[in-house]
Length: 132
Image (tube, rainbow, N blue to C red; front, side):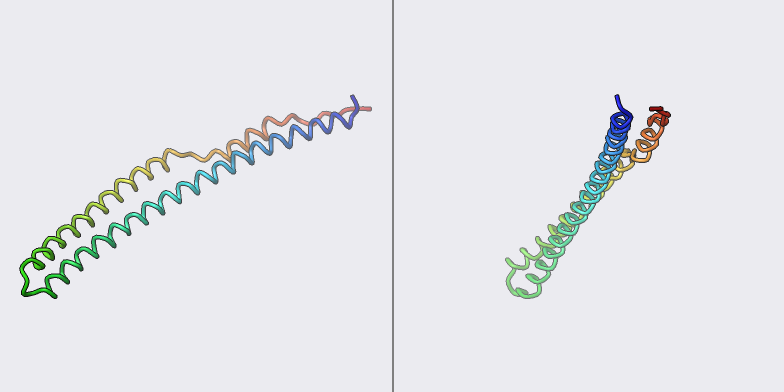
């Protein structure tokens, strides 16, 4: 074997190790971004519940105010108000539950990129002097 082929073989191994470490870092970045997307989706859903609940309460108040003389529409308005409040409370409880679940998963998640990089550096063999 020539010196050149030995050096090329070592270089390939070194590159492969670096690529493995980089791949693990990329996976961790994807995981972090997925967690952020999950948090944002939870907030977006919470805001949708708040919007719907507020619209129901306002619709109920509007029915009561606009149709003051018609008891049917006053009844509809009186029904919309607690329904809207119920939707708001349900949305908040669902948001809180999901936020706790995501926080537990985030806490259990431990990034390992730096550990992989350190292990890869320690595993690299020391350069040996090869005489021709």
